Length: 255
Image (tube, rainbow, N blue to C red; front, side, top):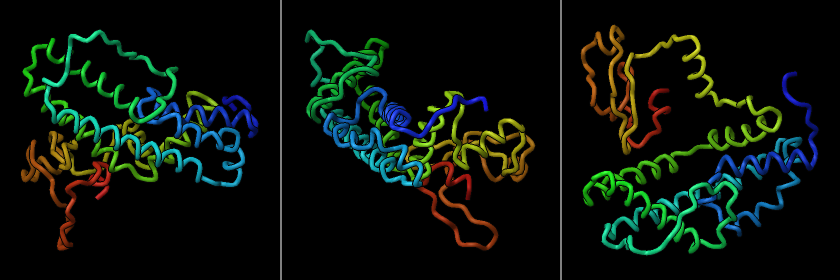
């Protein structure tokens, strides 16, 4: 009973609603005011939805977030195709970095202006750090393409975890809901014990890359994998090879 006692009422619903929006878009860079106006119907209704196991409001909001994030990243990548020469650094402009309490953008055009300034600010910082124009564009394109790939690989469990964390935080800011995958990783870290092939993997673009091999592990002893190898398929014994290009990293690990 370390958590504070809360009652499932309209006040509780409003806190879950506000926290959920902050989890998804705390910099107010994706949702527009029109989106928020549409979500307002849920502000004092989440308590009723939770009581009846109704997840529709959570997924309506999350699906819109995913849609808006893809739109923003597509816009950023399209903007970068124009090169650095399109940016005018002689203009007298300002960029609000802490946008947690900023008003929601009135339209997608207003978000375009925000993202244009953000990219311009990043380009300027990289130029001041001594990066060449070509390298800056390539770096930012890789960054936004990587973010876009991660967004497109979002699944229902990701949405559920975000919603449940908004719920648990309302009871206690130190309590988190963990998805089965995150719970497994937590137990691995706590016990310092893992049964696997002994390879540390990372995701790059749509590929799964071997980062390093654990000394003394099965992969190291087999001497068939080495760092920087790409894992393009997984099979066991005589089973048919499963193509894993484009998969989420946790999906490849599970397989």
